[in-house]
Image: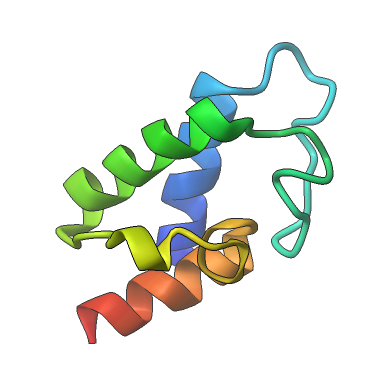
Length: 82
């Protein structure tokens, strides 16, 4: 799970964080509440997850419980790959 978190964190830092402000977010930090990723960004994130981890994210799975923090994403990817 830590590998998933580190890969997703790097993707977010490379694509959504401008400058050092906001770069230090915790694994449980909500992407939406902390304005790290907007709705368009989530579509990019989903594409990244599907390509990188070989999973398919269904429309019904696009919910905060699965996608709104590094912790949630890591658990979601583990379930999908399991």
